[in-house]
Amino acid sequence: MPGPACDRLGETAKRHSVWLAVGANERSGGTLYNSLLVHGPDGVLRRHHRKLMPTNHERLVWGMGDGSSLHTVDAGFGNVGGLICWEMNMPLARFALYQDGLEILLAPTADDSDAWHDSMRHIAREARAYVLTSVVFQRASSHPDGVPLACGDDLMSRGGTAILGPDGTYLAGPLWEEPGIVTAVLDPARLDEERQRFDPAGHYHRPDVFRLSVGP
Image (cartoon, rainbow, N blue to C red; front, side, top):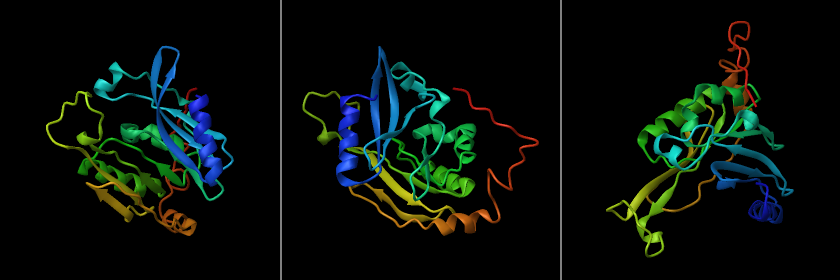
């Protein structure tokens, strides 16, 4: 990345004049990375984030990313940042985005548990930001014949995609056990309303006491 597959995603974003965030298995040299790509409506790759820490058995497959992408992108309608799956459980990774002006947080994941949504509600309130969590919905019957699967049931992942407001309430979803699209209108004024009392990187931050340094 960038490369031909990445270029095709950019062409799609440009053709439809949309911001497009897509997860990718990225190969660089002999290493695979779990990556999040964000293209702008002009087709340009605006953010390329490699997951910092593959979780548990994922370390057998994917390499570790770095801190160069722990920043937000000004999308015109808000500052957009994102972390991949259980990176969302890393407080300092989250705060790196907060202090860069985060307003909309992308949280793609394969975690279809109720506990994941407990975390999303907390993080939306902690960040005082909108959270868009896209959760895998997957059936065994959707795989090609001959693909070995360690699953006895057809439903492998039940989804749970949702959009949350800066007070931690659901604006759309969660969408369980069926494919679909969730949409919501995000009002920038709500960010200011919620941050009047608590702004994690503003008046409720103590930079004289705490400092976060993000390495490359």
